[in-house]
Image 1 (cartoon, rainbow over the protein chains, first blue to last red):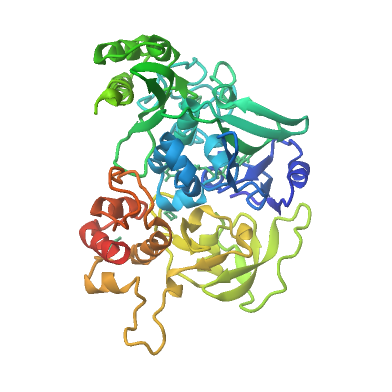
Image 2: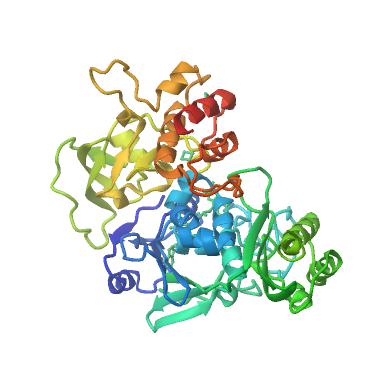
Length: 331
Length: 196
Ligand SMILES: Cc1cc2nc3c(=O)[nH]c(=O)nc-3n(C[C@H](O)[C@H](O)[C@H](O)COP(=O)(O)OP(=O)(O)OC[C@H]3O[C@@H](n4cnc5c(N)ncnc54)[C@H](O)[C@@H]3O)c2cc1C
Ligand code: SF4
Ligand code: FES
Ligand code: FES
């Protein structure tokens, strides 16, 4: 690893000043992604600003029924928080399906959201990669792209976002709270991640020097239920090939609220808006659920090696949505 | 990574110096196995490297160096973590326990720490390389997992009933600890003895 400066910030103002919005500066959360990438030379910061001692490690239930999750709360604490287990099971299931016990004890909320892609070419300094070196090309486009995107990709980048947490938060319409030189702003997680277009080096809409301080989970309607299902190469400790997160509220058989996010299929968690639109306000049956899933999946554009992801997503989405809608009415 | 990152004075240090602007190293006070060490270290040194190279605590191993295998597992403030992805400089004031810290109580009837006894009884290892982390991980699990749901947890079980971990849950808890000899049936059995 390249020698570098290290400072531990005690206040947000101090963190911002140390960082200064410089491209060579990085905030340090749990370090489980950043240190790994630094060791490979993919990341080469000259200063790390440690933010793990800022007062953002709390998970707070608020009177309006929302929950505020601090940026440095550890993934293991978030996954097992009583309010999360009770009201946002999708979130707990997503976190517990990722990484290992050791890593979840280290990883922070914000660091998890900002982890970089697992595209093998991004992590291999000897290969062209527009995300790592803008303008150098994309080795995955005509290379081995089994792990890559089937929605929203561009000729500049076909990578997927690896975070299970991000997929769950997308199904919850969570909000990301940011502090930066221009002040505080709140961005819906559905607008937080970018598609690659011609600037794949930019994963999110964050501005230079901005710090994530909290993530806000909106209140859940009484009676709503949520689930996460993930397909991966091994039963534990590995990334998604595809995943489905869904939050559904069914009342007297009618779908009052539905949000479906697909993971592992795009540069950002993919909201299946067509599926949602097809089911909202209806009394779903097994057949209409299958049709609704199809509405979204027919728009997929698989690459050479990853058509199987559409199959995986189809089977999981049918099962998850079936259980939350049709299955919901069974005694 | 460069070879050596730190030098220990082995004693009670004055505490961390305020980081000097632009400096790439610092003097840091670390708490390891109930002892205080003041070390000069490069900021890019991982906790694993400082434990092994500067403090001579070679119990936690260096294998994958990217967080996957668990060979470098230690307890940090009572929770298990992988020391290969932690910067040592950032751990000031936190309590680190390595497998060397899991010693038996002097004078006690059993010379082995309770976390280590089950794997000894079961002759759980082949080469033993993974023994330090397979011993330590259930310790961190004990502190953290009792009654906590996991991805393999059967959520239909009645609430508020103290449930022992199922074999599947023990395996899930230990899935961040790889054994290159594939001695899982006995390492998992030992884990089960400790956790469940
Ligand atoms: C073996 C292994 C298996 C894994 N499996 C999975 C898996 O199955 N699913 C999954 O989702 N993840 C998985 N992960 C990834 C893991 O979840 C991430 O590495 C972790 O969540 C990152 O969090 P962190 O706090 O350690 O981030 P860090 O490494 O500290 O930071 C990541 C990035 O975020 C920036 N950052 C951190 N905090 C802030 C902030 N508050 N504001 C602004 N910027 C910030 C950092 O500068 C850095 O660029 C795995 C990792 C490993 C090593
Ligand atoms: S898919 Fe994206 S991350 Fe992977 S090589 Fe292409 S540009 Fe790089
Ligand atoms: S050496 Fe740290 S997890 Fe493998
Ligand atoms: S016994 Fe050899 S690595 Fe586990």
